[in-house]
Length: 391
Image 1: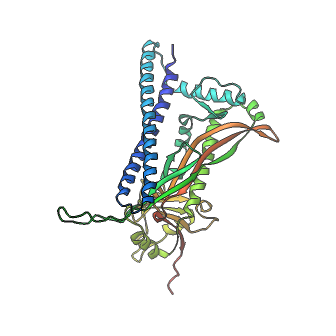
Image 2: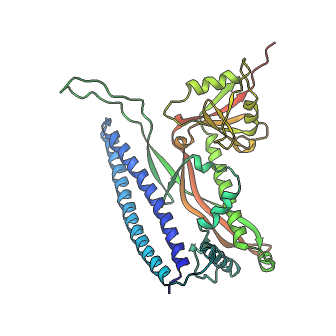
């Protein structure tokens, strides 16, 4: 009789995949609308040909993704039927139903690790290019228990299936319609700005500090250690690369309280969802700023991680050497991170054994992605200077 725990695990994975596919379809449909809207403003055959190629590529991607969605929905329906049938036949038992899934997954990965990939028991994980893919449901609880900053949640995430490619971007328009009389000729609209962002997936690697000797002698949870460390390395790597792109934004020098207020009042288009990604030193500086009436610049808000906002905009605090270069840097990215950066995701974190001069082999982690700036008008890399004290 099929094990309902394994069926349930497969069902959860399929549902997670379906959610990702549905999000991808939504992005592609939005992109289709943007492409169609841009056609009206085309002035040359060259631009029209470029848009036509992008439309075809996007439509092909929609068709392919919708086929994948249909296939996943059919598999989910089939698994739901199997699970219902299995639960009807299985004798009732006490205890929590979610624990066996976690246990079997960890045991399967433990066996894979100890055998250096020679033994691949049937468990709730898959292998990719000879490595064990760490399931999201095994990693997620670790992430939820630790309060850490993940910059990828603030930028646009785009799953890709190729190692390189181009992604069309239509920048936000300042154009507008014109009032016309009935049956009058349509006036010409502003030509949209149409750019293509080229991405080239990079592979990032890092080893888990755990030798074969440590595995042989350990009586602790190997899979748990792998899950936590690999996910930490993946998050830190993405944070570093995203912060590096923040630093490429148009530079802006700002002085004192008035400079900060003026920037928020005048320098950002209202269509952007502006936030402040600042160094810890700059956060401290801003947190102490007061106007002549004694009112602090930063506003209290318990709904955001830092507990503070500027002019109603969220403040995110980073280490000085992440958003800057050294301790004490008064710098930050001010703008819409989602519009400024796209994270092209190629591969989830995975682990495999690699050769090592000292221990023979070590367990290494791999993740593949690329980070690109896509809209230079969406933000600034700000260097802040204290206002000179009045004499």
